Image 1 (spheres, rainbow over the protein chains, first blue to last red):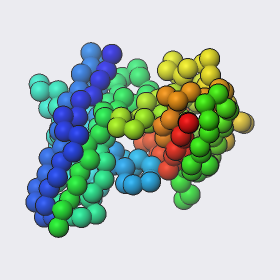
Image 2 (cartoon, chains in turn yellow, purple):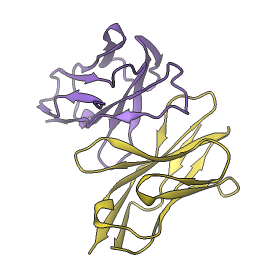
Image 3 (cartoon, chains in turn cyan, blue):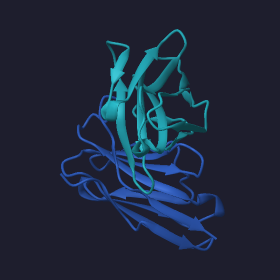
Length: 113
Length: 117
């Protein structure tokens, strides 16, 4: 079975500061990892995904994530956040032979001026 | 390109009533998903269609939930009868290729927020 743990339910940060949103997963098979963002009253939007190859993945809006197999982590980072980055962020996993995404419980990023 | 459309956006019903949600995926997308997102949790897959066939409905409470995909395009999700614990946001997503595999990007609609009183 697969599972995703997002360790922080809320992350407050000041504008222009760096941020890291943590994600750990468990899976008995090789994995594919995703980060989605959900703005208020909107659907989820894909930020980035790791399928294979380079462990550092760059996504939209200046976000990047690093796949660490030994630590079973896929943390999301941004060097300088903006007010507009305030949203809910979800980490998700699926694996070879599976089709459905398993989501974490989400991290609410609150960017303060 | 138009996104995934869902209606209604909000619905309030009393327990034991019936309710239906509608989803129109992105044109040409073969795979369609329904997710349930309970407040404070991540989305959970209810059912996945590939064209008009069911690929995965292992987490669909079949005693009260049903879904169909008409002619491999639009889809409806029905709850009959509703329970208090069904209060959630119901998200529809679609992806482009017929494989529905992990490399397909899923595009999500805005969701339908259901409140059961």
